[in-house]
Length: 531
Image (cartoon, rainbow, N blue to C red; front, side):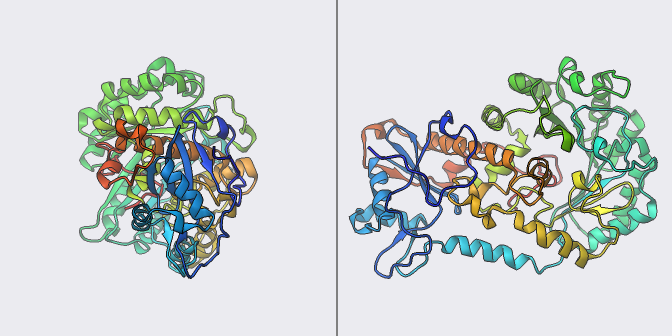
């Protein structure tokens, strides 16, 4: 019977409830595990960041968390792992050893066990010397909003709110700066939000004109409008459709659900106006996606709510957001949900709707790197240096949540200052640099969540986002179990010697018909994905 031992070295941050994860996974480490930097000239050895995880009794997953590679097998795989960790590679059968080499789990004789970790760090280090390369410009064009949603983390945090929208001259400078420091060949987004941007619809029109003024020939750049839709009328809907502005509308579900937390300033629910606005946009031919927030008021009926939204509005995508503390003083906000429940609910929804192509943005940005086996350095585009925000006062910064609080806010449009003040520092928010992430089976698909959440809970935006850390680990176990289900054959249950490395086709079954599609709302806005 394999003894349960802590990983060596142990992860500093283990999510609460890890031992009671519903999938009943167990992570094994050998008593004789080799040093991280050990180099043996006469035999192969397992690379670092390779874990053995028991997903079912007697069914194991060998997981390389940096390469996002897996091998499934029985007791034979477990015994090979134990032997290799103890430096006894000669005890492993030749066919299994060859498969482990082909799968990228082994460092060859004379190679460092942590060579993959070093390679990935070197790739990211090289990016630090470059100027910013923006793919998202988010314009918070106003500090004003006609709603008072109780979980909003923008309006309550705005320092010295402005009564006026961002000035045209400043917009012109910012849009020009954005195009100057972006790659014409990369897809790009200009995201107009607030506050409620449709309060100042003339500014929306001006931004569209400035994009047309500064964009380069055949450049793939499109508009996204984030709105509550309460001020949409037929004329505005027609204009947005004609200009191909993609509209993300905030709605939490049917009226009795939506009006719980999305009210106006006199306490009246906003659902009827939102519903009218969505229908006007759809009638005009505008592309519409729905942004909803999961909280205690919706988590247990999420399947039914999403099914209702899909039938009622046929949205292109669905942002089902993990509720965050509205302000630094509300980190125990009563509607917050536990990360494990969030991950389980979200992935069950993805599995139910993936063959219908429903783009669940947060699930996709975790699942895509897992399926594609591409290391994900950052969860947030700001940490990756690809996002720039401008607020109603004309200040720029990497993160809208900090910007409105006048933190990490720069006045000058200076690429060197932006690189040195923001990009060089925030690039280090990647798990590839964090010793605390050593041994984590989800390290390659994580990206370290949100700097705002990290600051709320740890008083340091460079810290680990502990709630994202938790739900990402649960997502990882769910992905592993789902992948096992795709490759499982019942006759293997009695075969201790079987092993299998999933094929690309088997991996892609986890995504179903879901794809990221540029120039649509089936696309991640402001978060790093593999392009």
